Amino acid sequence: MIDFNAVTEIEKRTNETVVKKRTGILKDPRYTGHCMGPDELECPERLDVLYTLLQEPDLSGCFTDISPRMAEKDELQRVHSAEYISRLEATSGRGSVYLDEDTRTSAHSNEVAQLAAGGLCRAIEAVHAGWVDNAFALIRPPGHHAERTAAKGFCLYNNVAIAAHYAQSKLGLARILVVDWDLHHGNGTQHCFEDDPSVLFFSTHQAFTYPHSGSLREIGKNKGKGYTVNVPLLPGFGDGDYLVIYERLLKPIALAFRPDMVLVSAGFDIHFNDPIGGMKVTPAGFAGLTRILLDIAEACCGGKLVMTLEGGYHLEALRDSVREVLKEMTGRRTTEIQSAIASANPKKTAYILWRVKQVHQKYWKNLAVSSTGDPTAVPSRMDRFRGTLSRWIAYFKS
Ligand code: Q9C
Ligand code: ZN
Image (tube, rainbow, N blue to C red; front, side, top):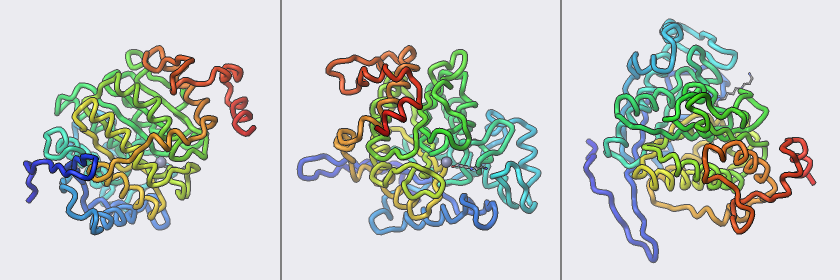
């Protein structure tokens, strides 16, 4: 039985203080019971390797197990239409049913998808209640592409959207920050909170690829303007580039927003070995990203951070990356990000930093660029490009 009241250990090392965190892991063997067919990228083996990872000598015993529950009907209905829920329910017990060209069900998929959404709610409950400091929901199917009335891109129910609504309506949290570092734009999550200023959606994604949404002009609607921040990236971004984006764009926005909890759609398809992604993030880069998110959560909400698995299709890359994320979350290691930021090629990020600042500084005053002495300032010569991407690409290649 888990002792949720165990006191956080503090361990002194030579000249740094390591504060160990209680990290919850939401897992369940039933999550491997959804299978889209042989040779599918989004496969049960993804969780097999992660659940095996947890048994490694330096990780075993470091985590608090959290058990899932099914999402309730009313929780699903906050995000999905009754017709869509019935359509998914009707696949129960049946063979393969295609819901989208990339997305199909097996006999237990409906129940597994409800267990994924409910599982993420449980991880959030555990962090909110203080049973653990932070948590990672190692669940599938993923969720961030699922729309109100449609399955999409391997996703059935939108786990993060359902869980963010749960955190607000059942736990009483006011503001939720949803960060989506998956390779693909989190279209479903964005659409769910587009006009809602209480949920800030920040997404980095590879531009000009599936699902072809998430341009930086998509900033939210009505009262939600400014609370959707899209950062489309060209392929080839690596650790330093991602850390620059998260440190210089996400961090100031998030500190101004002051979330009560940070939820992360953690996709590992930005790893350099991923079969469908063009990004170059390494396991150390994932640790650095996790460190920035933990810093934000620490500054705003007592470190309350909940990660949830989205994409990531190279099994070893997925395992090696999740290992580093988990080490960071437990506080056993604190990745130093400033040197990676300092050694990143500023040409790669200058255009997107400048564009996001240009579009969002009216909503987020602390993004304003000062031309002198500010390390976050974008070179004024960027103005010559008049904001066109093709001009910037030519500059970058020069
Ligand atoms: N049919 C996630 O990473 N590829 N989903 C579409 C054209 C779909 C990715 C190719 C990729 C979905 C959660
Ligand atoms: Zn993805």
